[in-house]
Image (cartoon, rainbow, N blue to C red; front, side):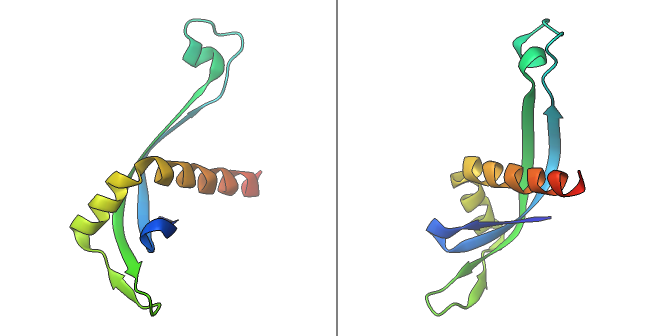
Length: 93
């Protein structure tokens, strides 16, 4: 489970990665550009989330609120998740 802070909406989504593909570049494989250059794909779902009011108190976003924020910020969330995943992998290396 990963937490993604979305400052523009003053909320935090708790996301689960449901599918992850991280294929490294294979310079000797020229079947397709994807083989030669490598590629990354990530799918996630927002499990839960909170929004923070001006007083700093957290409130549940609910299922529809999570879906709306996840849809609106999908690219940002995916980028943030990759950063967290890469940081985990470099910590183990």
